[in-house]
Image 1 (spheres, protein in one colour):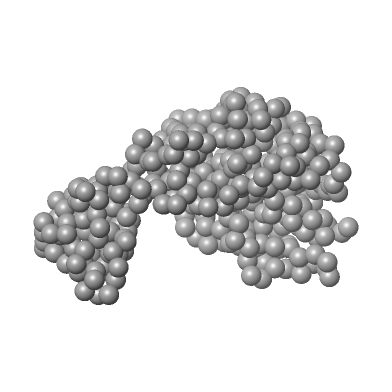
Image 2 (cartoon, helix red, strand yellow):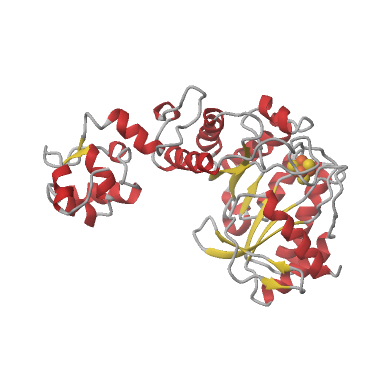
Length: 387
Ligand code: SF4
């Protein structure tokens, strides 16, 4: 394999690894008849759209996580780049206008510290030798040290480590040789400690990187409540930007090869709930769970909240606070702000006024009052059925 084919091989492995930024670009780069280098659309923390190369530096690994195709001892072709070799290859793609950003991870070889050093060597060569100023998302390795985390934060726009499970008991069922607190959670905590205690000017381009994490969904018997409890804590205590729920898919020749794949509707409900926690000011205690502590699949979590709390006691749009408005289906953060602004000038009495402010009126109408009146009849006016 030449270097470009090696890159196609390693980048192809990421299709399995990560749920993050998973939308492949429509234009894959042909490398040979058999291989294509697939890039991904991604948004930087500043909201800029980039074509992201997602790859491993090495697909060899000395750990034996139960769900993972790269686990040690599994019969699989492996490939490894040296940091300088990889950095020079990536910069060729960048200079050819084919990729604007990089997501770099690796299997563990020689321990977490040594592997982390290799990832950072590649990033450092890109930043300081090859003058790459574009987006880098750098993985933190289980067992990385605090000074390595700081160094990663000085090179990357985003850093992450996959917690894989919501707590130590669940992780033991997935990856018994990973330490939940000392190897996985600790690096995320260091990131936040550094962000709070050291000036952001020390970060790459004067900013500290954002952080994300990923859970394997559905492989350890974990409930949605467990996942969202940890997610809520990460949002509030460590200012995590996003939690990803990567649906478990059984991999042949692993201890979990006979376990069923995760339900994609469950993944969707979890994302909806996590956005309520992150962007809408919801607390975990406001979400509805079934007897197994899972989100109901048949209803989206915001609608479930509204059915329990607003159906019989609709909210007066002209008096509601921002936090109350954000609890109405069909009203997002922008719409809520627009309502508050518009209310300063006039009373809102008509669904068409709400629609102009960005509200999905069909979803909102069953749960609100406009000037003391339920607006449901207005929907049928327009031939729309109340939700
Ligand atoms: S450490 Fe990462 S790459 Fe290695 S087996 Fe575990 S999940 Fe897979």
